[in-house]
Image (cartoon, rainbow, N blue to C red; front, side, top):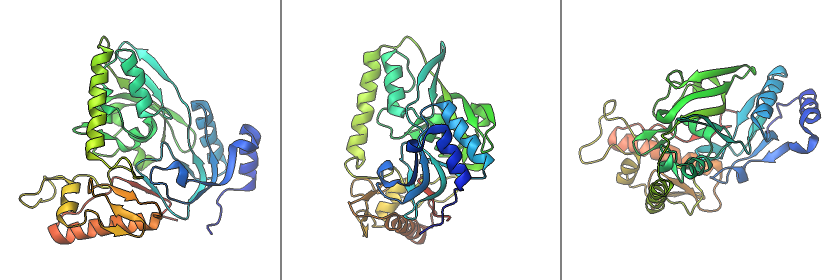
Length: 319
C-alpha cells in the first residue's frame, strides 16, 4: 500500500475550511474515470466553485502537498496504486457571456454542457463538439481536437491558478497550444475558466443539426458502449516520421495493420471498432491497459518504424 503524502495539519486545515464530509480519505477513483479503473486518492476534494478551487490549491501549496486534478475522467489512466496527495475534482461550474462574441465557462463545466448553452442562445462555433467527453479544464489541458480543429483554436484566453496559488490571465497565443498539448503539461497550472470565441445570430435548429451529425459520427466510429478513455495515441506527423506507403497517417490504421485490432491483455482489449481505442471488457486493471498500450506502441514501431506518442495521460505511474 502506498504511503500517504498528506500531513495531518493539512487535512485538519482542509476539513476546517470545507467540512470533514467533503474531504474524503482513500477515495476510490475508478468510478470517476471513463476507463473505470485505478486506485484511490489519498484525499479527494470536489470544489463547487472557482473560488473553492483556488483556495484548495493555495492551502495545499502552503503545506507542501502535491495536487492533481481530475475533471471528467476521460483521456486519463489512473494507476492501480492510486494518486498521492490531494486530488481535486471540480464540480458544477457556470457559463456566462463575456462580450458580444465571447463566452466564459468555468473549468468544471462539461464540454457537452457548454455546447448546449451556446446552441440554445444561437451562438455558433462549438456545436460540432457535441458528444465530446470531459470538462472545459481537461479539454484546455490537452488541447482536445475534433477532426481537424483543436479546442485551442476557439479559445480567446484562460484564467489559471499556479501551483503556488497565484492567479494569472493568459491569452490564447501564450497557452502554447499544440497537437494534444498546452503549457499546462509543463507548468502544472490549473484552469479556472476559459473564454471561447463564438458568432452570435445563428439559428439554434441549424446548430442542433450539426450537433446531431457529430454525435451520429461518433456512434458510428467509436466504441461508445464500452469503458474507454478516448483515443490512446496521437496520429503521427508525416513531416517527422515516414509512414509506410498505403497506410494513412493514423494511429488507428497503424495499429490495425499491425494485426492488433481485437487483441486482449487481461481485461483490456484493443477495440474491434476502432483500433486507437482500448476498452475495459469488465475486469481490466490499469496495469492491463498500460501493458496493452505498450504492446501497441512496440509492435507498430517494430513493424513500421513509426513511434506512436500517447494521447491518454497516465496518472500515478510515477509513484
